[in-house]
Every structure is written in C-alpha cells, then in structure tokens.
Length: 374
Image (cartoon, rainbow, N blue to C red; front, top):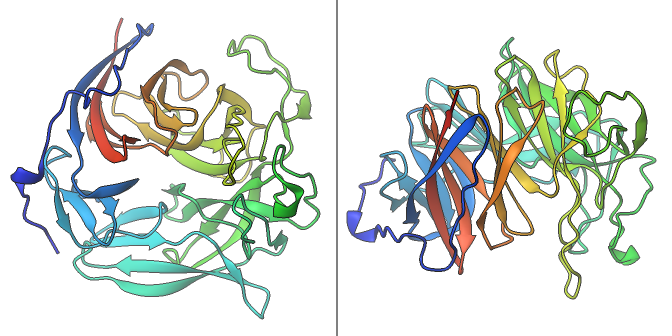
C-alpha cells in the first residue's frame, strides 16, 4: 500500500542544535554534509529501500515511508521485519526475523515475510535452515538463542542464489566473551554465510567467515606490510552482526562487529575493532579477518556508482568511514552522532547516501555526498 506524503510532518533542523559534525579532509575523496531531516514517528534506524526507490524505517506499530528519496516522510504500512531484507525484483521482497529455533528433525527455522506485489500485500512463511554444527548460544540480556541469528547481511550472487550472514555458536565453541557475567553464558560468536537456491525458502551449505583468529598484520592499514600468519583475534564477543556488499573489483566484502556494550547495567562500552573479510569466489572461501576501524557495531555497507564504499557504524558514537580501493584500505572516519545506537544508510543518488541515526531520543537522517577527487 502506498502512503500519501504529509509534508506537515517534516522538519528540517540543521542538526537540532545537539551535535556539530566536522567532516575531515580525506585524500582522494570529497565528502560533503547535506540536509538533516527529522524522521517523524520513527523509533528505530532499521530501514529498507525497495527497488522502486521507496524507503521505509521502523515506527512503533507502523512503517514511516518516503517516496522522494528521503526528504519527506509519512506513516504507512509496517515494513519488512528485522534488518535482513532484500528486494528480488519484479515486486518480490523478503524480510526475515532474527533468531532461529531448532526443530525436532534437527533443522532450524525462522519466520519470513514475503511480498510478491512490491509490499502491497504480504504473507508469512517459515524459512528452513540446515545447520548441522549449530547450537544454542547465550545473549547479552540473559535470554538463550535457540540457534544461529540472522542479523542483516544478505546479497544476491552472480548465479542468482542468495547468500546471507548469520552468527552464533557451533558445537565446541567454548571461549567466553570478555567482560560479560559468566551467568549469561555468552560465548564468543562466529560469523557464517548460508546459501539459498529457492528464493529464501531453504538455506544450507554454511561456510565460516570468521572465528577466533585474524590476519597477523595487526591494525596497520598499510597493505604493503604483508603477513600471512594467523593470530588470536582481538575481540570482546567474537565476530557478529555482519553486513555484505559487492566491491567494484567483484569481491564480496563482509564487515563484522567484534565488541560493543553488553545489555546489563553498570558495564562500560567495550569497543574492539570492526573487521573485514572478503571472498573472491562468491562466498565459498573467505580471507582471514583484518581490522578496518577501531570500533563498530552493526556495520552498514553501501557501494556507490563511483566505486567508493561507505560504511556506517556505531558505539561509542555514530561514524562513517570510506574505501576507494574495493575495501583494501579504509580512511576518513568521522563521527556523525553522539548516540551509541545503531546507524544505517541507503543510497539516494549515484554519489549520495542518506545516513540514519539516533539523537536525543529521535531518529534523524543526514545526506552525505561522496565524490572522488584527482
């Protein structure tokens, strides 16, 4: 159902007077901050952009929709559930839940909402996962998860199959997350990718992207310093909350959280590096993870038409970082918000992104233009 845009709901503050953004000089790139817009009625930065350009973010009991690239917003139907969504074209849109549960036959299942008419109508389904090594895992709020978690990374491969990220524990994963009460049973997570050849109805053939180790070159971003030694990864929580993007050179990049803040009180934020792995063979194998930023929960990746990749991430604060060499190096990180809540972004032009973030209990979107320079 399309919604009528109510211009009277739109506010355009400079930045609500709460935070002054300082965009740095970035060699090889020109980044310009544009208009900042309050998203009226939005309660979360969970967002989905459909193939027709419409954008929806989450409200309490409805979706908040834009039909003009994010400049005006109005309430409408609830959008896709959770963060894992994909528009397959021809009106078919999938939205997945998060936590899988184990079935009596040993397979796992997860709720899925499918639309075949561009989200005019939707129908619930159950997606089935063949994850023979998966097991339950703890969480930062004390609730056990029945199986692996599908968080938000999903992509269509060159042969038409779907590939999605999941995280959690395999049997035998025993190392406890740093800084968490033992009673939570939070073991360090692994990130895996799974594949579907039937448009998201069933998934299998899991491949581990990252668990336990990283490339031994350390945080030095100079790729001339080559090392192929694997060393224990610097993480608080293992590898989780991964996103995917196709780089200009054809590789698939996977950005992952490794630490943040736990969901119980009186514990400070515990940032550890955000990591990147890459696949040159459509997800069959992955390079050892390497640090790409000094922190980062729920990374959100976009590749612009120019080949520049933009990543939004959070905690502490909200941030943007950039790569102009297919993810080999990252540069220009700057803070866009003081809130520690998740950020997300969508493309709104060949060289423009709209970044969503929380400030003062509200959800805002700011446009950024990113261009290459000589």
